[in-house]
Image 1 (cartoon, rainbow, N blue to C red):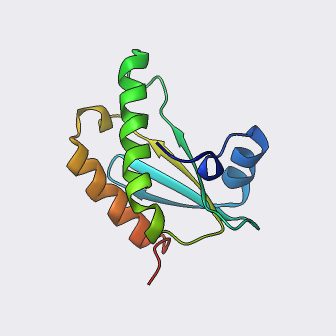
Image 2: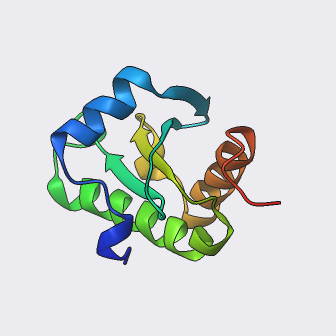
Length: 114
């Protein structure tokens, strides 16, 4: 579970990331990121009904994404807002496959500390 200070919640924060952030695609994931002026990085997750009509499946995907980000939180640079958008097909991926895609996308986005 991600701590509250690491969660994007407000609509205006999501909109800022979408309008001004840069995006990267990897597998079934699309990542948008934008620098913030905070001492923490914040994350938001979007899993649309295109993934599944069942909320149980969408929530499972979000839980997996949150757990992966929580494990990597100490390695991620401070001061960025990140929105992770999922694409169709992620619901059939295993935890390890999703984790590999998150690793690749964070490396490509240069979000990890050296």
